[in-house]
Image 1 (spheres, one colour):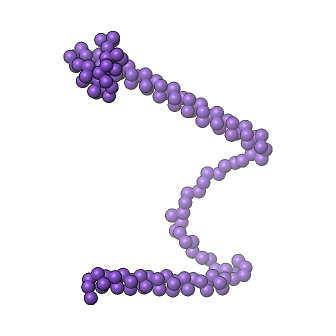
Image 2 (cartoon, rainbow, N blue to C red; image 1 turned 120 degrees about the vertical axis):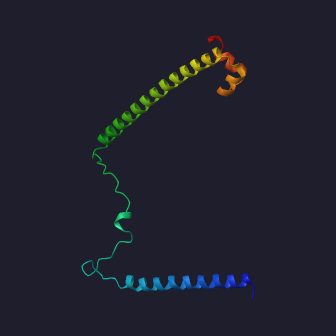
Image 3 (cartoon, rainbow, N blue to C red; image 1 turned 30 degrees about the vertical axis):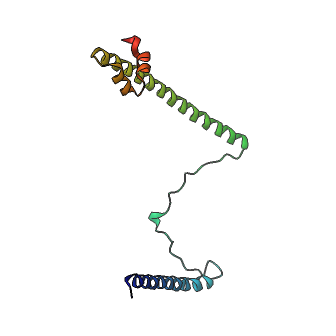
Length: 140
Protein backbone atom coordinates (compact mmCIF):
# COMPACT_ATOMS: atom_id res chain seq x y z
CA UNK A 1 0.00 0.00 0.00
CA UNK A 2 1.32 3.44 -0.86
CA UNK A 3 2.10 6.10 1.71
CA UNK A 4 -0.79 8.22 0.45
CA UNK A 5 -3.20 5.33 0.99
CA UNK A 6 -1.92 4.71 4.53
CA UNK A 7 -2.27 8.42 5.38
CA UNK A 8 -5.84 8.46 4.05
CA UNK A 9 -6.74 5.36 6.09
CA UNK A 10 -5.26 6.90 9.24
CA UNK A 11 -7.22 10.12 8.66
CA UNK A 12 -10.44 8.17 8.17
CA UNK A 13 -9.81 6.17 11.36
CA UNK A 14 -9.18 9.35 13.38
CA UNK A 15 -12.32 10.93 11.95
CA UNK A 16 -14.49 7.91 12.79
CA UNK A 17 -13.08 7.84 16.32
CA UNK A 18 -13.82 11.54 16.84
CA UNK A 19 -17.38 11.16 15.49
CA UNK A 20 -17.98 8.16 17.76
CA UNK A 21 -16.72 10.05 20.81
CA UNK A 22 -18.96 13.01 20.01
CA UNK A 23 -22.01 10.80 19.59
CA UNK A 24 -21.24 9.00 22.89
CA UNK A 25 -20.96 12.28 24.77
CA UNK A 26 -24.21 13.57 23.27
CA UNK A 27 -25.90 10.26 24.13
CA UNK A 28 -24.77 10.71 27.73
CA UNK A 29 -26.14 14.25 28.01
CA UNK A 30 -29.31 13.62 26.00
CA UNK A 31 -31.21 11.35 28.45
CA UNK A 32 -30.15 13.51 31.40
CA UNK A 33 -31.87 16.43 29.79
CA UNK A 34 -34.97 14.40 28.97
CA UNK A 35 -35.27 13.17 32.57
CA UNK A 36 -35.05 16.64 34.08
CA UNK A 37 -37.31 17.22 37.11
CA UNK A 38 -40.63 18.94 36.54
CA UNK A 39 -40.11 21.70 39.09
CA UNK A 40 -37.08 23.68 40.25
CA UNK A 41 -37.20 22.30 43.81
CA UNK A 42 -36.17 18.84 42.61
CA UNK A 43 -33.47 20.14 40.27
CA UNK A 44 -29.82 19.71 41.18
CA UNK A 45 -27.52 22.67 40.71
CA UNK A 46 -25.65 22.52 37.41
CA UNK A 47 -22.19 23.96 36.94
CA UNK A 48 -22.09 26.87 34.50
CA UNK A 49 -20.76 26.16 31.01
CA UNK A 50 -18.10 28.86 31.38
CA UNK A 51 -15.98 29.64 34.41
CA UNK A 52 -16.94 32.86 36.17
CA UNK A 53 -13.63 34.47 35.21
CA UNK A 54 -14.48 34.16 31.50
CA UNK A 55 -17.97 35.61 31.84
CA UNK A 56 -18.47 38.83 29.88
CA UNK A 57 -18.28 42.10 31.77
CA UNK A 58 -21.58 43.51 33.00
CA UNK A 59 -22.98 46.42 31.07
CA UNK A 60 -23.38 49.77 32.81
CA UNK A 61 -26.78 50.34 34.35
CA UNK A 62 -28.76 52.99 32.52
CA UNK A 63 -31.59 54.76 34.30
CA UNK A 64 -34.34 55.56 31.81
CA UNK A 65 -36.81 58.28 32.79
CA UNK A 66 -40.45 57.23 32.78
CA UNK A 67 -41.64 60.29 30.87
CA UNK A 68 -40.83 60.52 27.14
CA UNK A 69 -40.30 64.27 27.44
CA UNK A 70 -37.73 63.76 30.22
CA UNK A 71 -36.01 61.15 28.09
CA UNK A 72 -35.88 63.58 25.14
CA UNK A 73 -34.42 66.28 27.40
CA UNK A 74 -31.80 63.89 28.72
CA UNK A 75 -30.85 62.79 25.22
CA UNK A 76 -30.69 66.42 24.03
CA UNK A 77 -28.41 67.39 26.93
CA UNK A 78 -26.13 64.44 26.21
CA UNK A 79 -25.96 65.38 22.52
CA UNK A 80 -25.13 68.98 23.40
CA UNK A 81 -22.28 67.80 25.63
CA UNK A 82 -20.94 65.55 22.89
CA UNK A 83 -21.15 68.33 20.30
CA UNK A 84 -19.44 70.80 22.65
CA UNK A 85 -16.64 68.30 23.24
CA UNK A 86 -16.26 67.65 19.51
CA UNK A 87 -16.19 71.39 18.77
CA UNK A 88 -13.45 71.87 21.35
CA UNK A 89 -11.52 69.03 19.72
CA UNK A 90 -11.94 70.75 16.32
CA UNK A 91 -10.64 74.03 17.77
CA UNK A 92 -7.60 72.20 19.12
CA UNK A 93 -6.94 70.60 15.73
CA UNK A 94 -7.16 73.96 13.94
CA UNK A 95 -4.78 75.47 16.46
CA UNK A 96 -2.34 72.57 15.99
CA UNK A 97 -2.58 72.97 12.20
CA UNK A 98 -1.75 76.69 12.48
CA UNK A 99 1.24 75.95 14.71
CA UNK A 100 2.46 73.25 12.30
CA UNK A 101 2.04 75.58 9.29
CA UNK A 102 4.06 78.28 11.04
CA UNK A 103 6.78 75.74 11.86
CA UNK A 104 6.93 74.63 8.20
CA UNK A 105 7.17 78.27 7.06
CA UNK A 106 10.05 78.89 9.48
CA UNK A 107 11.88 75.74 8.40
CA UNK A 108 11.57 76.58 4.68
CA UNK A 109 12.95 80.09 5.35
CA UNK A 110 15.84 78.64 7.37
CA UNK A 111 16.66 76.08 4.64
CA UNK A 112 16.62 78.75 1.92
CA UNK A 113 19.01 80.93 3.97
CA UNK A 114 21.36 77.94 4.30
CA UNK A 115 21.36 77.41 0.52
CA UNK A 116 18.77 74.67 -0.11
CA UNK A 117 17.26 74.89 -3.59
CA UNK A 118 13.55 74.76 -4.47
CA UNK A 119 13.55 71.20 -5.93
CA UNK A 120 15.02 69.84 -2.67
CA UNK A 121 12.50 71.74 -0.53
CA UNK A 122 9.63 70.74 -2.83
CA UNK A 123 10.67 67.08 -2.59
CA UNK A 124 10.66 67.27 1.23
CA UNK A 125 7.22 68.95 1.19
CA UNK A 126 5.81 66.46 -1.32
CA UNK A 127 4.83 69.16 -3.84
CA UNK A 128 6.18 70.41 -7.15
CA UNK A 129 9.04 72.89 -7.36
CA UNK A 130 6.68 75.53 -8.71
CA UNK A 131 4.13 74.96 -5.92
CA UNK A 132 6.82 75.24 -3.23
CA UNK A 133 8.20 78.45 -4.75
CA UNK A 134 4.71 79.95 -5.09
CA UNK A 135 3.77 79.11 -1.52
CA UNK A 136 7.03 80.03 0.22
CA UNK A 137 9.02 82.06 -2.35
CA UNK A 138 7.93 85.58 -1.39
CA UNK A 139 8.70 85.05 2.29
CA UNK A 140 12.47 84.61 1.83
